[in-house]
Length: 303
Image (cartoon, rainbow, N blue to C red; front, side):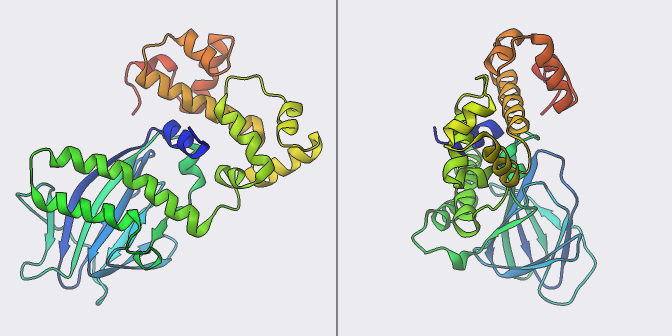
């Protein structure tokens, strides 16, 4: 498992395709701040629109463009015509997905909307910008992302047996392709993804991801990076924005959350697997990060 795979796995990303929107004329649709741990996305199948964010930034979207909001930022989607007040679409019954319409005669905008659910303290999602757009014009027609969007559209249109399950499974794959396209076109200059693109710091970061329970020391990490102790610490903090220990703790807590949610290991075993010799010390740190005890998470107190 490479480091990006590891970060995706730790984030426990689950995708869903939730609804389809077909709008006509002048319209506006308001989207409130999502709960922490949900990243909505919009795929424009046909037509165009514009998106306005709380800071006043405006973003045009055209057919084939995909918008992802990693931390669920509030936004308003508008038609390209005159600006009107947001309204509530009418839900139309039937079909694989719930269909929401504005207007009746034709469709100026056809859009698929869904979301990615993830561990709310995910290092991966924290490293992404407030919003990112993958424009269709930046991708060759033979790229896997346009092909996946065509599959999503086809399943949404088909209303066949198992379509809901398949749409969610395809949406799961969609996140990885969006992440690939974003990294390829924008790269990362700071944060956890930037560490991976640094030849020497990346070796140390990959080692921590591969074995978070290990008792890492500055000397061991610096040696892995082929750097002096002082140079390593300065470079790591400059690129990551935090110390190696802060990142290591976050990785351990993400792993613990996943083990609590998806395994039957006891708390003492989980504590050991994430690098804590004392269950009490592990539980204290876990509660500091998540605001709830490990036992409550085990009982389903968090999602």
